[in-house]
Amino acid sequence: MTITSLALLFFLAPSTQDPVQQPASRPVARQDAITAKAAETTVRHLASEKFHGRQAGTKYGNKAAAWVAQQLQTLGLEPGNKGSWFHEFPLPYDKKGKNVIGILKAKKATKDYIVIGCHHDGQGAVNDKAYKPSADDNASGVAAMLMLAEYFTKHRDKLETNLAFVSFDGEELGLIGSRYFVSREVLPVDRIRFMMVFDLIGGRFFPWDEDRLFVMGSEFSDNVRAIADKQSQKRPMQVDLLGTYVLEPVGAIAARSDYAAFRQARIPYLFLSTATPWYYHTVHDTADGVDFGLVAKNTRYAADVLMEIATQADRPAFKRKPQTNMREARIMLRGVKGYLEHAQDIRLPKQAIKSFRQHRDLLEKIVQKDKLSSRDARAIQQALLACFRWVSFTRNYKKR
Ligand SMILES: [Zn+2]
Image (cartoon, rainbow, N blue to C red; front, top):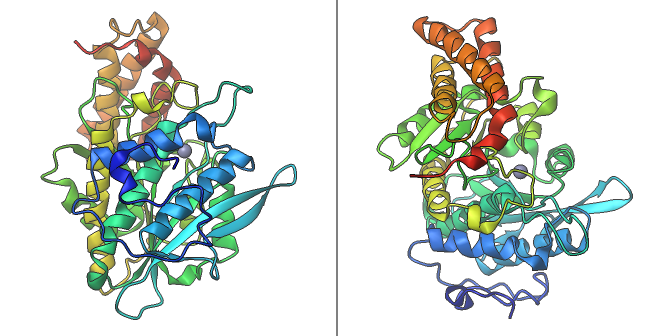
């Protein structure tokens, strides 16, 4: 047995077995599938030495894919690629990546799908001994996907559409797995109603912040935005809806996660992330740095949004020309003010303080208006770029 958590011993099959060889079993799902404990078990496992950073195309990456497939099989899902749990695709240097696909069929006969995605590949080895655990990026997203797979096995009878749980590979090498998944039509693309993707959901981009989730993509569907908005109310956390453009200052070519290929195929999507804290893509992205309670909260929000979308009769319409929204300016103003408020604690250089003051003054002017111009949108992107630029200083932040 390779799984350390005692709680999971009752639930999961040993990871040494080949998921394809193992007979499909349908164990009784736990009462509460979405918990901090469940999130922690997955994150600690995937961030462990055993997976050595899960780089795509390496034996460790393949091991991670096999483990995810096995979890989906244990939950009683069906393999999603013509009887296989895997979708192989080419990577640079003659290597191969492996997406993992598990299907939860609605009881009602339907050909439509909702894709619930994450990526399991990570930053890989630094050398023979050291590796980047890639815990928040993105073992936390895998944990969310697996908890949702378990959660929805208990709600199959309500579903109007099938659910496809997909863990992409090769994300860190340029969103390769998700691009192949869409272009090769592993699932018929015109049958995908909606996709949701998780990438880093257990951290704090602003370490002084309360529990907060950024939700991007709702600008492409009025129906999805209404649901995402409604579900963000009455939460023990903040949910900030942001236009995806805020993260893409050089345009869609520099998309930040696996939503890109789906957006290009005009599929409505939501990209859920707590963003990229100071440890992003370093050896410091460890399981100990992940807030498992936050992962569970974020996943519960996702479950409620997905439940609404998966139980409605109609598919959400895709809006080709999304609009900017004034709250994007307010969200970035709050971020910039946070830096200024904590400038001393985090030993922010003078140059940075000066820059953040300029961003603050500009954003304050913008929020006075009632409509965003394209120049204002650019200013919002620039404010986020400043936060990215100085994020390494936030590691100095100490909670008092
Ligand atoms: Zn990622």
